Image (spheres, rainbow, N blue to C red):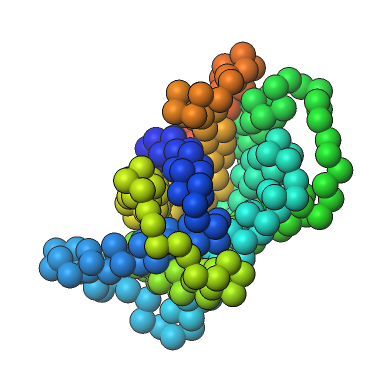
Length: 297
């Protein structure tokens, strides 16, 4: 299921590129989370859905404020760092930096949530990272380096903020409904990103082509409302350190989607990288399952 979610998320980049043909990246991020907040809010009108999370909604003011802050500052600053950093860096370097997020997930989960960090999980994460490196870099040896220090630092800052945001959201999902936490985050992220977009990009253009409309439907409905709801639901039940390595599945999926939809060239190393990534995910998930069974026994 985690791999399937990341395959869906891999399509977010091509969808966003379609919308960004006439809309600034800041507005695309704002559209995504405003639409998510409205969509999840509409689902709350369904009695069955509302009853399912009513008793598990964050009612403690401190926890509600944490979820709101994660959206307003964590999610918003993550996307701004990614967008602005990628403009100053290269696509290769930015992707390699983003692919390091499972390391920070696992380390922060170990420190903050006291999740186990056995040797096999470390080997799984490192194997997956090697696969991502092979795909992005098209080989083992670094083939290009732009020296875009500020851009790379911004991307790395986005990775760190997103990792902290995810681990703190996990701490809330252990107490409350993960979908309720997602709705609060999306609501405040949408407001924050809209204000940032107005300040940085001004009023967005009114026109939206049919292709851009469908791209937004995919970005909001599939990649965010559906995929993030399932991700937050799983966070209630699974260790985030083990879940994080599945993010690496986006790398080969994005390469394949870019090839078939955007006619981008497909380098042969994608198959080797994909095999390494799947091996790393299998090793990590197997370790997490063994730890969970041992704790229950």
